Amino acid sequence: MKAIVVGCGRTGSAIALQLSAEGWEVTVVDEQEEALGRLGPRWQGRFVLGHGMDDGVLREAGIEQADAVVVATDGDNTNIVVGQLVQKRYGLGCVVVRVLDPARAEFYAARGLRTVCPTQTAISVLADAVRSCQTGARA
Amino acid sequence: MYAVVAGGGKVGANVMRSLLAMGHEATLVEQRRDRFDVLQEEFGHQVLLGDATEIHVLEAAGIARPPDQVLAVTGDDEDNLVICQIAKEGYSVRRAIARVNDPRNQQLFDLLGITQTVCATTGILALVEHETPGHGFVRLLPLRKENLEIVEVQIPAGSPAAGARLDRLALPEGSRVITVVHDGQAEIAIGSTEIRAGDQVLAVLRPGVERELRQVLLGELR
Image 1: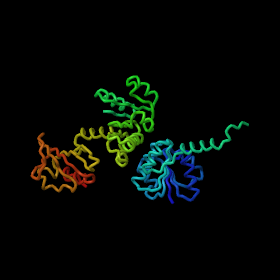
Image 2: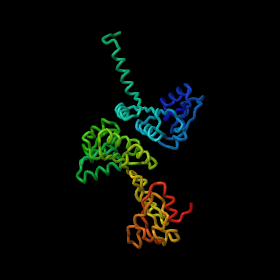
Image 3: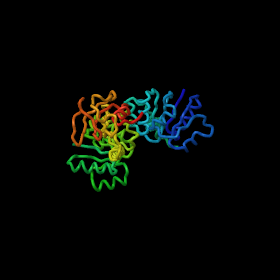
């Protein structure tokens, strides 16, 4: 199976390494060449330099043969636009998009984009942690 | 009329000035503190500090009224796209106009349903084409929604079309000559209209037949 990861920051690079370890054929896209360093010296997959909104870059990354695309640059709006582009132009079913702002994540999720919101996850986890505390106790 | 203007750079500030001068009600949204401070001196409470791609900021600007128009004129194409999508799809704003900063992104706006766009670069290039002597083929007006384009062609001496009646020309399928201007006199084109060297011809065409049309009217080789 082939996957493209757009954005090679902390999240993108970790996902790329994880998918690769699970046997996926992974191509990473990032605007900055230094980002390649995050994948480590033993990176076996491909790396394409460029912007995810650029059709030429997506094609070079093999969008036409891809089974899954993960969009995780540091810009919410870039991710939202790239995700929709991949969905609409290439008809790809598995497009997962990171959106940090919970309101925008929800807005686009309601319109058929598979958004993942780490902020919302953090909110839930923190709230659960507080609920499970022994309140009133002092050491 | 109520308008929300997103982006308080040179474009946004001037759009705002014009709207207010026309007597309209408008709110300008700017996310940079330093720019906001300057704009506030001029526009007072009509400027809002915040990121216009955040829904709560748009709501503070009155997106839920909804405004008659939303003008997304920031320097960032992704932001302009998202602002227009939220306005149209989330709040049924009827007119959401986006500024396109990089003309290469134009297709993307079309693909994502934002068809009302303005691109300064494309406008400037159209003028450059128009002013360059010997440039016989000018794209006057793209009709994106209709998937058509209106072009102006200056018939050169030696063109295979010069001296021919319109109905004798092998114009490509998907194109039609609308008018012929001869010595400053415009004529609605019909079959018997004769085309002469030096005439200006307006034609409507589908994208993709441009090369064939150029061959017929300009005599360009394949």
